[in-house]
Image (cartoon, rainbow, N blue to C red; front, side, top):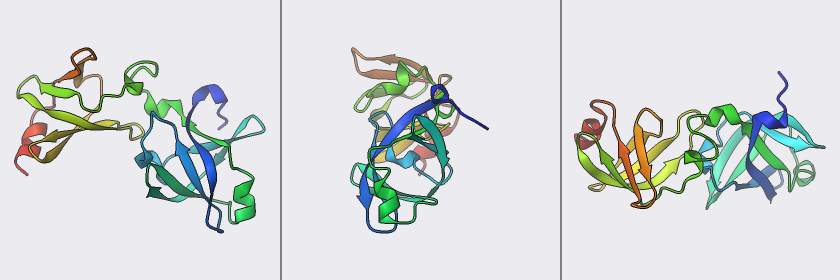
Length: 178
């Protein structure tokens, strides 16, 4: 299947090579988390203006960036040819929210209030997992993970830095019992 650039979204750029076996260090776009770079993620390198599919063999976190090994890039010389190349993936993997609005918000530190429990903590991270983004909330030295989905997130108030949610029945209880 062919994908045009209009169906793709930039998630990173190859910053430099890493080692001699074809690994590259990625500079991740600010709206994405390094945890999305898994073997399951379809990636495309833009070569001569065209998206060319590649497969991630493995990835490893390195500070704020990630080192990946792309299949068929087996040497330092091959990897050097791709330095500065954009890495893209399918926009459809990130369609849970309007691309121009909520998915790009920096909500770290926002207070989270559940319809049933009231205040449950502050957002420590928006984890943009493809097809299943989640927010991680600090609550009494525990992390509560809530899907970042329209049917759960009722309202985001940027002025007050608050998020109103309606967590699925039993989800918060599950974390409180741990």
